[in-house]
Length: 360
Image (cartoon, rainbow, N blue to C red; front, side):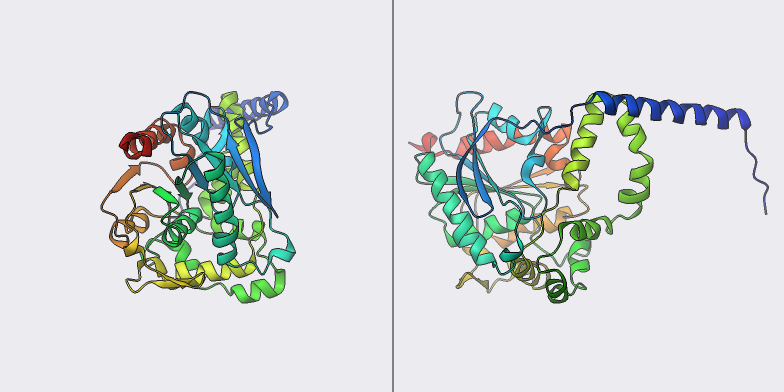
C-alpha cells in the first residue's frame, strides 16, 4: 500500500481558507434579508386552495393577448419570481407581456380524492375564464411549466377555442426515452400503498425521490459547497438561500390526481399514443392540436431530458412549431442568468408575431 504523504503547510493554508469561508458565511447570513420579495401582483380569483394572480405591468404592453402561467402541482411557482435579479416573470413584464399566474396552493387531506379532471375542468378552466374576463379578451396564451406543461397540453386539447398560443417549458412528453430516469423510477413506486399510508403524497417524500436521481451531487456535494455559496458575493448568497427555501417548499400532492398522472403520462406514455387517451370523459389526441406552439427545454436537464421534450414536435399536429434549446438544467432554464437574458425576450417576440392585435 502506498504511503500517504501530507504537506503540513498546504493543509494549514486550506484550513485557514476554509475558516475564512465559514466566517464570511456567518457574516453574510447575519446581514441578508432573505424574505421573498416578489413582483407586484393582485389576487383576482380564488377557490379552495387555488389562487389566481395578475401581475401589475411595468411598461406599456407590447401584446394584447395575456399569458397565463400554469405551473406544476409539485413545488411552488414563486421560483419564477425568485428575486428582482432572478425573475422570469419580471423579465416578461419588462418585455410588455401581460402576465397571470395560477398558484395551486397546498392541498389538504380532504383533497386526496381530487382527480385530474378536477384540476383541468374546474380549477384551470375557471382560472382561464377569469383571465379572459379580467383581460377583456376571447383567447389567452397558455404557458405550462414541467407537469404544468402536460396539464396545459391536455387543457388546450379540451378547450382549443380558449387558447391562442401554447408555450411549454421543460415539459415531459415522451416518457419512453431511456434517459428519463424519473419515469423509470416512478414505475416501481406503489402509489396505492402510499395513498393508503399517507392520504396525499407528502411533499418532503417527493423531494427525497428527486434527490435520489443525483444522490451525491444533490446530497453530500451540495452540503460541502454550501459554505462557498454563502460566503461569497451577498447577492449570490441570497439567491442560494432563496433557492434552498424554494426547494424545501414542497406541497403535498393530491393522491388520486397523482396516481392518474403517473399512470397516464409516465407509465402509459399517453401523450405519444396516436389513438389518443381518455381524460375528463373524452378521448384526447395531440395530433388534433393545431395551435402555434413554442417548446422550451434545457440541454442539461436531468429531470426532463431534452429528447423527452422535443418529442412534442411529432406528437402534435401543429404546423407552427418552434423549439428553443437552453444550455441549462431543469431550474436553470427558468431562473439561470443566461436563460433570463434570452428566454423572456424570445417568448415576447414569438408572441408578438402571433398576437391577435397584429393580425387585424
